[in-house]
Image (cartoon, rainbow, N blue to C red; front, top):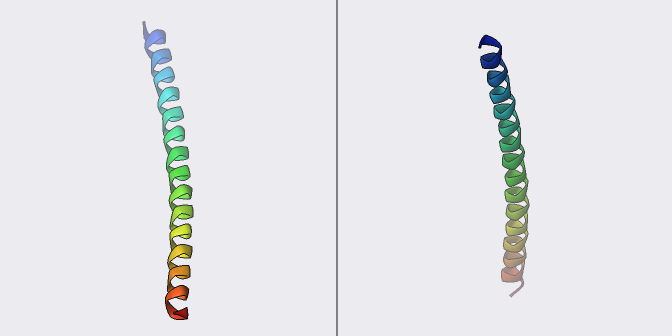
Length: 55
């Protein structure tokens, strides 16, 4: 009984750890995507400002 409980606990811990890693990876990827999107947005606004100055 004790061994089974311990094993199930270890399995649960493993699943939890894997889930946390997956979550962290997703958060990182979302961060990178947001950063790239912001960079594109900044470039677009810079182009807009340059065009505004030119006219």
